[in-house]
Length: 139
Image (cartoon, rainbow, N blue to C red; front, side, top):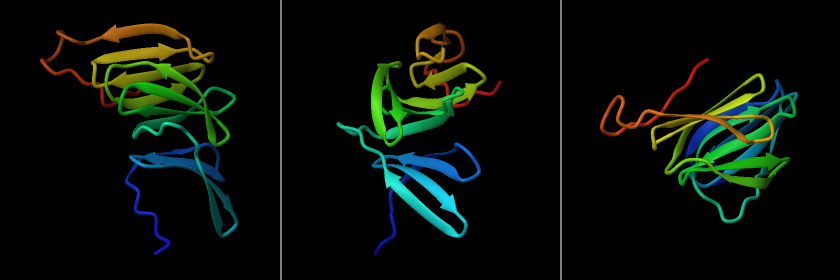
């Protein structure tokens, strides 16, 4: 069948007519044109399962977080930059104004600027639980 059975872990909107989905085995960039929906596959090698995603900053960079702690910075449908960010999965990405926040299984909440340089890191290991994990962020 033509149905894509890929497990979706994130769906993020860039505009009213553009959005992206990602998951364990895929990244797709979608465009809505009237009643038509088209997609273009994302290209990354090697592919690591993706856990989180967001569109960040005025340039609307697509950013994904991998199961092994890497931030993928996309340009169109290709990964242009890889940033080691966390030890283990990046469960949450949130962009607000000119700040990107990433939270992971390692118990760290990291803030990034629009050049993807680390600004700050809050580590909750030992503070709240034996197995800290940041799964959601809101500002």
